[in-house]
Length: 130
Image (cartoon, rainbow, N blue to C red; front, side, top):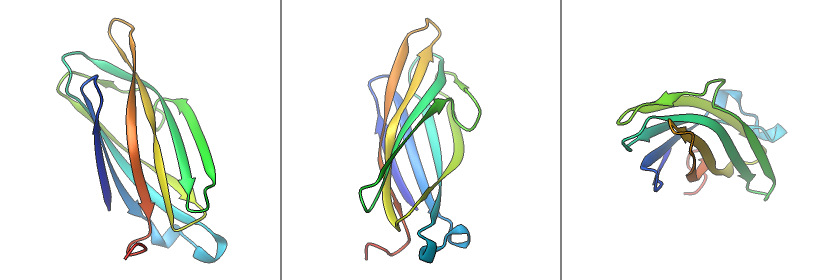
């Protein structure tokens, strides 16, 4: 498990926890499957809606994949002040080590958009770095 947190000037905390899914992975076919659980905590005084996500996924060979889309896991959650939202998704890379990073686009009730940085976090097979 890997955990990382970030706080943006919009007072939103992002926390990521990563798990390697060994039973769905196949090292001989360069398939390494990871799940990640993201918690988005709205520490601001305003209600925010998550409109979009943008990811940059990089494997250990330097191959990069960009993923952009509306919302997360088919939802555009509204996160009230002082509340949090959590979801789990996954990523498949060709190496036992990689990274993910990106940003969320959130909108307040006045229609102002905020880009909240998601700090880089590691996708790693357990004990790969020992």
